[in-house]
Length: 378
Image (cartoon, rainbow, N blue to C red; front, top):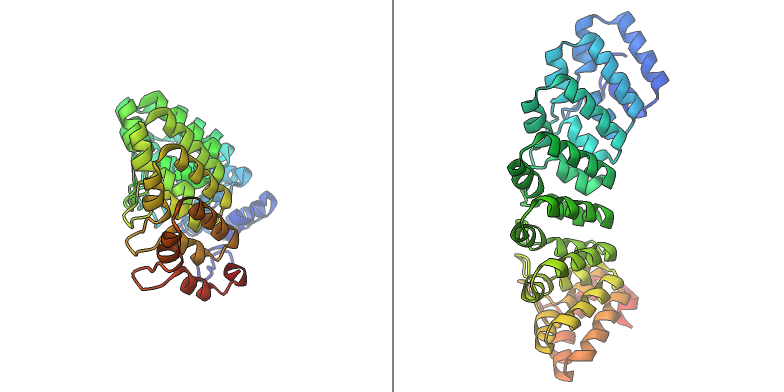
């Protein structure tokens, strides 16, 4: 029972870590010491990995249970060598290349992060802390900062930021932390936009302003694109989060030129030819769509609004009108219709909107029929 594993490679030790019940964990530990050899305790419990390469240490850090993590640490120190603690626990990675530090940053629990940091400083060299913890990347190229911006909270971001400034050079902070990209060429700024949390976005922004030049902020943060050509603006619009979109917009207006706002934000397209307007239509959030519309009217010419926004097509020939039909959201469809009637001629509405086809020859009517939403047809 003590050493048996399930189909995912989980031992009773993994399950005890997952449960987060210190009493159960204590009983398992006492039973193990009574029945197992030291070698079995070390290799089959403390350092045992599941099919994803995760030890109970990873599980405890991931499931935000501070007491469980403390228990694993104390028992590990009782049985493991310094080398095993350092390289299989503190710096040990799962199959995705993630350490417990990555998991702690993702957890959103600052107490967990604080514990891992304290233990790391006790055991690891400065070089190990810098390059395998603070700047350590998983197989997707993500650092703990990417995870903190994506899943964490502002307190975690602040703590990790203070520790980074304590340990890293300005160049490392700028190029590997603030502007460092994962395999999809996304910075922590992109992840902050994806988090849908305006407080997180604000925190990343404050750290960036502290260290980066205006040019770096403008070109690599505000207007920086991932491998799909998406800025944080596209990402915020795609997730239907009006608060995050508002925040990106306000920060952009503070820094970039009117021309950049117009042609790289409002009308900027990703590699599929989609603008934020396409993403807003697809998001199903009428508030996002309304905001983008108001900002467009404030900045763009009538011609740009008509032919690059309302009738602008992606590489598959789809307008925002097609995307509203794809989502099957009658409120969004009504909003795009209202905006179109404000600006387009009857001919344009008829032949480019109502009867306009994508590259597969489909009108919004065809797409809506597939969705099967009767409200769309009204």
